[in-house]
Image (cartoon, rainbow, N blue to C red; front, side):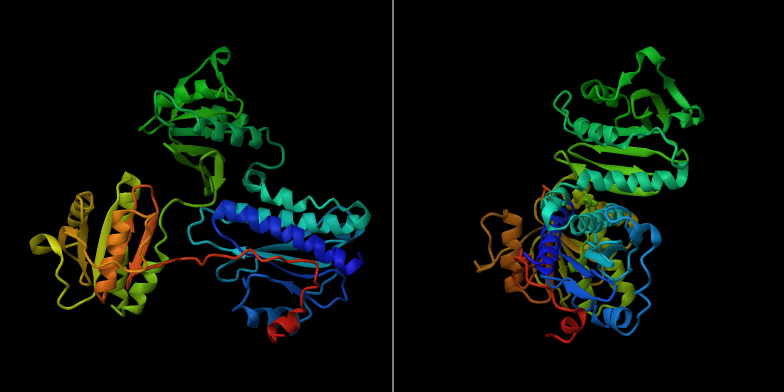
Length: 478
């Protein structure tokens, strides 16, 4: 294998592992790389799934029309063949997360992936891309004789490490390097506690982690004697203690080793909070949400429907900015209420004038859903079997509505009655769309008998060892 084929193999293995790992963490994800191995090499692009299409003008201006990016490799990075990678931060491109660096073995590399709209934070994903840059630099520095090909495997399983690396970066900025809060045991405990059932129920309540030197600043309701403090690794016992803070403003407090006591919710200069919500939960720091967790894994999702498809439909409907925004907020409130309360519901949004006739419980004077108390009523009515019928003027026309229609090709027997009824009804009626919230969380937006997907299904393409095109050829369509 010659040098160029070896480099291509390293890139291919790294990108495949990165893409697979991010797809498990954030949903179907693409990945791409722009790089130059040596200072005088032409900049190349490796984008097997078209992630970077649409950004050609930016790349042309930055990498072809200007030579400012060809700055010298920092001395610390260039001096060590295996070591330091000087970071190059996010390029702030719409819909993308990017991170890269320079090193003695790879003159320039910038990794990219999708910025999903329902991410708690992009921090862990940036750390993932940063590690991909480090792995590639290390593999190419090792050269063919020592190449193990395990970088892809590392990146596939990097979720917990990415969350930890993000927390460490944030913690070091606020507390400095000298800290005794050990993040890996905390993350392990969070996942284990979330999987522990007590009296037939999953964990609920908050567990706050604070560095030991900050414990004296905490105001405890009940503090446990040192010899009575429950070790954090005693997951079953900690799960029992969570019953004391369930559905309250209280939280358990830990120094990362044991449970120190119970306190009212407060915000130290830096802390980590595990918010257990039953079958799932959220990990937060002083800086905000980091990620969610469920089924023994960390995920990037906020677990709230982003409703990008609804936003696009309302923009195309030309309702006016004010009315369109108000209708979007109403739909979002209804959907998120159903998600939180874990019941299914169906919303029929009708642009027709007059509205279509739907069998169901009519309302003599349609309810103005712009009024908070009437919107709260609509949230309750959404729990009744049948659909809510909403006009383009933000009025609730009826509830418990029955959606009928003839069978159509878009039906899916794997989906429930709500979904297939909506497919049939929208196929038979123009000027409407239907939002279906399933009891197990998935949200579908259906129009003209077809489900509108927020993301396309991605085909995992083999990347091989063929040298990627230069950026100039890629931009010119060669």
